[in-house]
Amino acid sequence: MSKNDKPKQLEDEEENGAAELTDTELAKDSNEDSPTLKEIREAIMGIKSQMATTIREELATFTKDLNQKLLDQASTLDTHEKAIADTQKRVSEVEASGMVTKKHCSKYSRATKASRKELPLPDNMPLQIQRAHRSLAQRPGPGTSPRSIIVNFLQFEVKEMVLRLAWKAKIMLNNKQVFFDHDYAFEVMEKRRTYKEIKRVLKEKGIRFQTPFTRIRIHWSDGPRTYADAEDAAEELRARGMVTSVSRAQPTATLEERIHTAFPWQQHGDPGGRETIETRVRHKLQEFRRGSDS
Image (cartoon, rainbow, N blue to C red; front, side, top):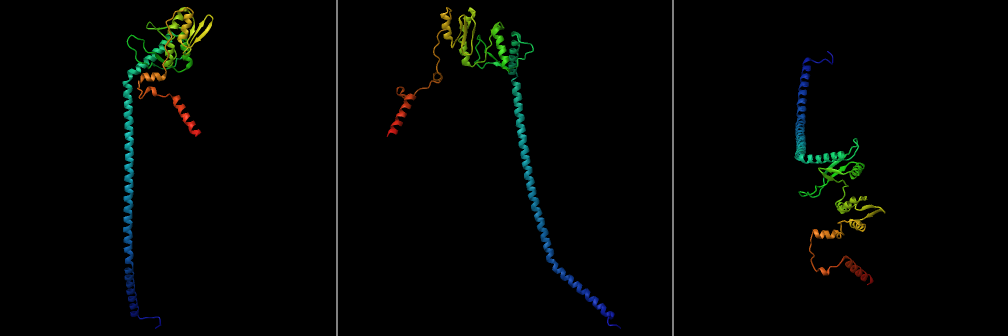
């Protein structure tokens, strides 16, 4: 029997001892791993809590963004609704003003037809009338002359040609003569109207004349002369033996006088004690000089 040979009973005892040792170590290791499982469970709970917080935050952000988008859409719808309402209002106004538009078109058509019919204009010449309307003066009473019709041409050359042809011809409309002239300011038109009687006398005598702006140029046999107002021209006509009813007009009121007439303000205080601007300025200069000398 060799030294390495062991009895069978001894081998069985060694195996049983190894098995007991392994179970003990496993039990010991199991006891040592118990805190690790607890930490894992706590970590899992923390992750769950963090995920729940993140989900709640993301859900709140999504809800906020969704509400903002809904508000924006509602605002856009309100804007579109107002735009539609404004458009419908304008359409209603246009439909309601259909008669006014027809009147304006009627004046436009009347001006075009009258120009084509009464003036020797080329057939292929476009008048290019932009608009035609009554003047903005006060509506005249019954039995008086109607307001002038203002015709706006696109091109200056066409307007000048129409005026030149109209001044050479005698245009009648409804058995009444129609006069063509530039669209001057009200003050200029008033000044030009003062030459009406003088022009009538000159036409009867067959004397040529022109009315450039607010003056009148008369072509006498001894040469043309220009007059600044109707009174000067009337005196010349009388000196040449022509009868005219134009008399010397009263001086035109200044702007300040017209304002005082339109708004009759009352002066408070002593009118005799009022100082003119020149007097007040003179007093101020004297005070300044005395202060400089001292």
